Amino acid sequence: MSQIGQRWFWGTWSRLGLSIALVTLVADQAHKWWMLEIYRIQDRGRVTLTPFLDLVFVLNQGISYGLFAQQEDLGQWLLAGFAGLAAMALAWWLAAGTGGRIWAISVGLLIGGAIGNGIDRVRLGGVADFFSMHAFGFYWYVFNIADVAIVAGVIGLLYDSFVSSRNGASNTA
Image 1 (cartoon, rainbow, N blue to C red):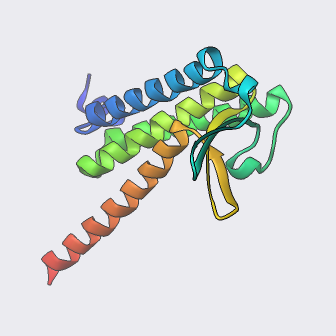
Image 2: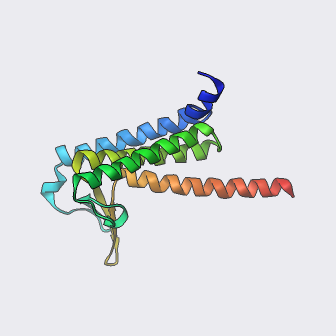
Image 3: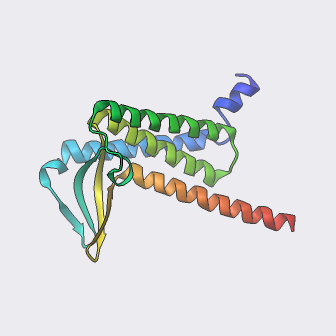
């Protein structure tokens, strides 16, 4: 592959980031398969694990918090397509290699989470969510492993940007 092609499709951090994406995707899809096919959470209702964490099945046909719900197949395919495009853009960014190890891991988490939720939209007609956290009568949204990966990826990117900017500022002083 030419040097230009290599920069577009494969970079210094591609192996690490895409490995993290693959592990995230497999963990997410294996968990969803187990919850739906083996444990059959959809037949059990709410299952209390701890005073602040329950298992429950919710098929989220929208985006965060069920916003912009799409009951039609076309809507789910469009949302899945958007997730696929986002994953491809993130893979391209990963190949560009603009960050370090934390950045690559964070981008990999985002890619794996986006693809995992995109697969659900095509396969199930929405995103399968299972974890319900609550405290003092307040319930947060129901989420899955892909959602955790996406949030962890965003936190990692924010951390990396602050650490990088602080290190850059201290080196110029």
